[in-house]
Image (cartoon, rainbow, N blue to C red):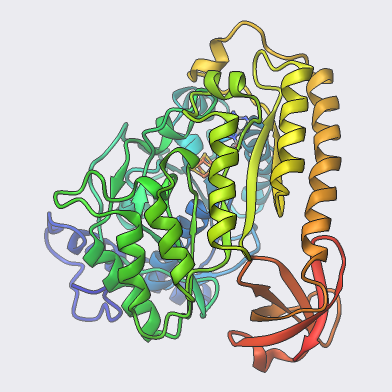
Length: 481
Ligand code: 5AD
Ligand code: SF4
């Protein structure tokens, strides 16, 4: 079955069906009745805001929440002072959590003026027991709390929250369930994320993701292909395949499939012109994938390959299962076969036991690999992870010093890498109007770099050749070629 776009034949009367997604469509219809009554009473539909914290996975989940809300008749807004505000939270580092608490205080202020306002929290942070305890104790104004495993039940939970003044909490520890064919509301008409797998089994010792997103589960290739065919029919030309560790895609399916084989199948879909994916774990990146990328003109020239540390000793304590040398060899192999590829990475500074020498090794690695960009993070202690219990936690001042040094080198190499393409003509997918310079639009190159060119909205969604006239570090200015 495809996602249902016309709810009229669905009766919200009688007993809710037990099978999915039929049950959720029943509850969307229920919510819609509520919305219609609200609209008659207030002369306008209720407004709903979904705010996303965290990664691309969360962004995609938020599109699913928005799809359900839109079908229920809510008017979507970016203003958090709404009739329903949903925070889709992240907990990968502590500062992500702190931001949520800060913003919740603000929502409470809005709710004082609009006591009928409903506040819902979901996402990774809700999968942590101590967070939920704190919310129950000190944030009694929250109406609904659910997690990452039961997101598909949003319509049912929302209806419960609309019908009750109690705080509704529904959290699952894990699931092997994947519910297909619920509505989504995409942010961009021409590009879309597509989940290919959920969860993570790697257990890097610093990382909370396996605990909050559960065990690794892959979607069936035919479901993925069908979703992308539908997206293509709706005008989508660029897709981003999403998973915590896409290189281990398909291993646990009844009929195992490699990630490279999935890519080759997705490549055949008419209308799709660009394919991206994230995130790759270096330990699982196969020769087959490199060859598939090299042979394809739809697979974008970008690989996000988190390094985390350039020191083999630290990598071992992180449970990354590769050495500094193995990473360097892998990069060499990739660059040999795909010379125009951009490689980006994630690096953590201040992992327990990290010495000045370890950091030197990381800095040296950034210089050797010449990353096109690197996201650098200060290590954040996550309760329940093995690293949180390690003895030699690094003092904050030392970590910050190392972080600042690393950042400088990262910026230098990124600049040098970008400068190499100055003067070239490359294809860009024009994504949006430039907010700061009127008369300009912003596009993205296959290698994920950004270019600003003079142009109007008619270009949005088109792939056009652009001349990269001037490199400004992380972005270019240019013109249509
Ligand atoms: N502290 C700091 N950074 C972290 N990341 C994951 N867990 C932590 C942590 N506890 C970073 C990793 C990962 C990125 C998404 O977030 O670099 O690749
Ligand atoms: Fe944050 Fe990780 Fe959850 Fe993404 S999967 S929202 S990065 S905790």
